[in-house]
Structure formats: structure tokens, C-alpha cells
Image (cartoon, rainbow, N blue to C red):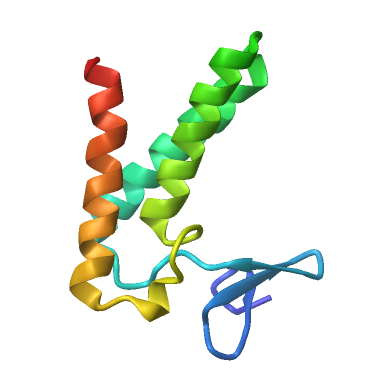
Length: 104
């Protein structure tokens, strides 16, 4: 484990290692306020999934998890294949989509 207490990373920094399994790391160039908001949305959706009762509700919360993880760069197109402006735009778009669902 690194000195900062975070998860072990691959040498290129693109993945974290958790219990021997490789997971895509969060995009390191995201503005902290946007990344924090996306992490908050992700946590909220994961929490709601634990209590969701019907298939439609589960599907809705899973879609929110997907949006948050795409915004963080953990799913969808690999963040290292996009330009920095594209990475920031994707994160902002996913956050806006999540917030729009709350307003609906």
C-alpha cells in the first residue's frame, strides 16, 4: 500500500489493485469539486441499491452508478485515450445528467 494510505496502483497509474484485482483508477485530472460531487452521487446510488425493492428501481439506481463511474473515468472510454478537455467535459456532463434526474 502506498505511503498516503491509498490503494496500490499499477506503474502507469491507470489502475488500482484491490485484493489482487485490477480496477480502473479515477481520472487524476478532474477538478476536485466535480470528482467529489460524482463520488457523492456514486455513494448515494450504491446506498439506495441496498434498499431498492423492485426491478425498475434497481435499474434506475444502477444507471446512476454507471453515470457516476463514467464521470469519474472508471467506466466507458478509458480516460487516458481522451484529451484533457474531453475528460473534463465528460465528468461535467455526467454530473449534470445525475442532477437533472433529481430535478425531474
